Image (cartoon, rainbow, N blue to C red):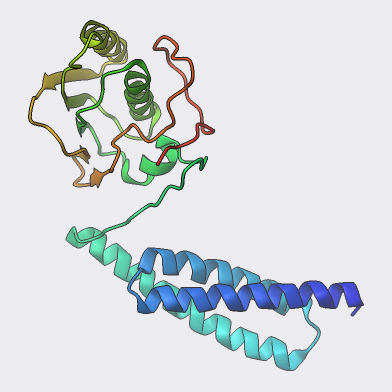
Length: 236
């Protein structure tokens, strides 16, 4: 084996060892979803080591470890699936400031099974242009997704300033746009709403600290329109 090949294998070995070590730490901490991801990544790295090395003893040793990790990963998968079926599954996503790749499709897609036909959105801040636009993008995702959404319920609060008229007009426009796609948007206002949550009629409930408004506010707010992007930066 060339020195370059040996160096690359050593890098893979270190990366694999560090990844499965992290998987075990997360496993012990009962952070099973994160642990599963690390096990899967670690297994992939170690398989690359087995393929690259000529040392038969090392191949045998790593194959044994890979088998152990794969067994544990399968056990975790079964545990997560059981929690989902029992309604006990909890998953937390941390989005860092200026992170990208957290579009609504990325965040919500795994919960949007084909049986979803009704959605409830409770968010007191669907007011300004960019917030209306975020809600529109969320609705667009529902229309384009694998689910067959027919009804969306929005509970929000009135803009307390001069933007109330713009808010009502924007929501009316979204309501009409959805009607063109065969989707009914029911809008209600509350003066006491504080919590933000989204519920699907397949049993999933998603709580988001900032609601749908986790994207950074654009420097210039443009009129509401149908569009989608995966590169908008998020704000803390």
